[in-house]
Image 1: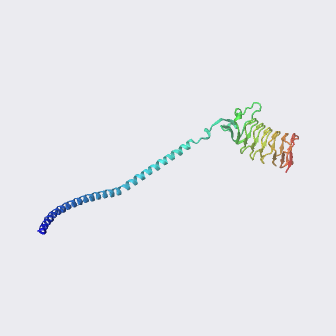
Image 2 (image 1 turned 180 degrees about the horizontal axis):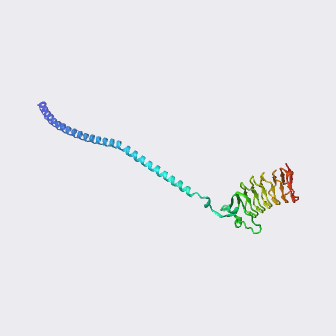
Image 3 (image 1 turned 60 degrees about the horizontal axis):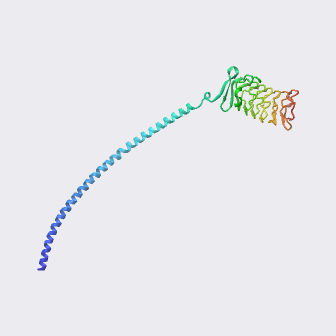
Amino acid sequence: MLLVSGCGQSAEKTERSSVNSASAFEDSISSSESVAEDDSSEQESSEISVESSQQSIEESPVSSDTASVQSDESNVSAAEQDSAESSVSQIEEQPSEESKNYIAQGVCGGDGQTTFSIDAEGTLVIKGNNTPMDDYDRDADNAPWASYKSQIKRIVTEGVSYIGTYSFQNCSNMVSFEGGSGLKTIGDYAFFACVNLSNAVLPEGLEALNEGVFGNCSVINNLKLPESLTVIGANQFTNCYGLHEIRIPGNVVSIGYGAFYYWGQGSKVVFANYDGISFDPNWNDGCYADIIKE
């Protein structure tokens, strides 16, 4: 009985278990269908997403690249325009010869063809068209730059054939002179008493230094006479204490009186063609320099 009873309970339990299992199976099938539906939905969503991504991939690069190219072209065009405008601006801002900061300008000879200008740095430039400068008066001190003498530090000539008498006397702050091509003659006392003039460049083609051109230029120490020179006027290098040696070129044919006045012992005057020169009887008055013949 116990066994049968036991078996009956087991059958009931088995039946109930079967019912429960069937119910669970149905629930499982329902759940699986739900999961399948969800998976199907996700798959559809994924497919839509993939299709959308593919469409975006297919469309986006062209649009992006086009926009990028257009943007680059726009940037290049803008840069080129800015560069062009900058170049034009720089060209426009270049100071012209006429707009430089001159403190004085005017005419100084050659029937208006010889002109001068003084810039803010103290350079006096005299320009001509193979034309001369005017002569000026020692006492009147009437050169057109007379009131600017203290500001003049450098003098340059261009296309000037003749420098007038007393042109630059007492330009006490001038330190250098540069004679341009075409210069033939320097007039009497043109640089007289330019006490700080140390360097003078005389061009080839210069033929005559008239009387006293460098008289009392006490510190001049760099002066080379050009081979074209033929005439050395009186009192030419009087009191030029800074000059310890000078060479007289072979084409010189005339030397005036007192040309080397106050040249001391140990100084040297070297002649390339001593015997071919016509000397003033007093050419060596006050000169204690050594006379050397090449």
